[in-house]
Length: 97
Image: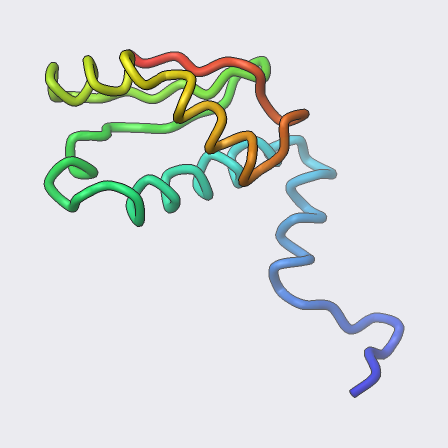
């Protein structure tokens, strides 16, 4: 099936609007949160309050002190996972709050 000139997938439109209006990093933050939901146990995932990206830095806010400590200990591991999945040019640091 050949696409007509103005026929787009909805995900392509969302990405296009995100690029135009400057909230592309928010879509990536949602993708990171989805990745963590698949990767972590449900009870651990529920301890994650938010995921944001600011100035090429992934910022993850975690409620549980134990999970926060685990993320800090494995910071390089998670950063490498995110860079492998979403691209190294998107972010270069990970901050756990």
